[in-house]
Image (cartoon, rainbow, N blue to C red; front, side, top):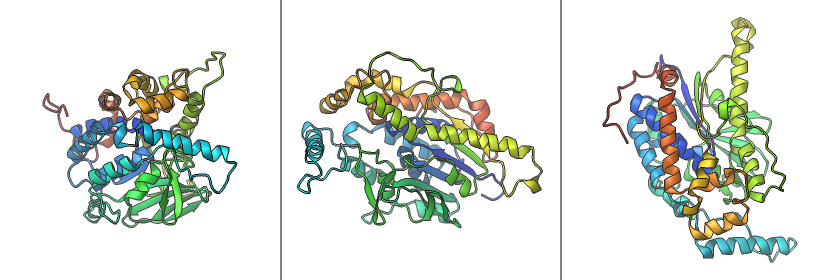
Length: 392
């Protein structure tokens, strides 16, 4: 990769919304088939996409095609147990725990749903070995196809944001409540990064319980910068109409739990990416006005931030009726029908029709910004012309 800019791909969280990233990457793969990202950073559901690219031995064209297939075949039942018995038993355990006043005899609660199906699905998709190692990552690093893979989790014991780094010539770092730790990425790192707080159970990683990486990661671009990125392509799953937050609207009624949870999940998974991107752009403007000797070792980093052109939350509401009956009953009990937005629902809407709509949106959005996107990535490989046969 010498002589080329070190391009980092940063993939944030958002549950089922991460299917949008698969569509965006599919279009890039078709236009620049042999593009190689030097650094891959994934948080929450974005960790699944990052690991898929890191382990794949073929071109970005074939890797993105396979990633699109991975998401297209995903269903709610392949992410968590959605049967009446499973969901009912989980809710009952939580109720008993709350009513017991912390009694030692109360059942242990780890999440609202059982995510063993997701572990099984990812084991098959990544061809994960019995020891949790994921083949392909180390091989790509040794061959020079990849510099480093970074997956972020939250250590529930210490409250730290931990970025696990699998790479070549990498270094660890320590900041306030943030650290980078060298390791070999395993399936547990992915499962932990995807563990939505309270909803999905935490995962034990190297002796500590870890959950979703978005909980404490206030600067989601920092791992890529620590690893030496010169350019950053960040794919957010947050919809901002006209690039700004929507206007406040008061309907007078008390917000249902689903509305409150949706705001909370947006704060955890989506808002930090926008804030951090804005900070990087401001630093770039400041550094451009300073002579190099006065920059205190700081350097400008080229940024390209992609985001949905339509609201994934509103889109999720269109497919809510297709969810499995028991799960639909439970989410409606949280007030999704009364909520003014479906942001919480969109995180858990692992429904094929919704996932496919997000993939198609990602491809459309990448195509619509082709005039900016392709030149940004173009010092890697010349873009390939598209023809009518390149549909998948």
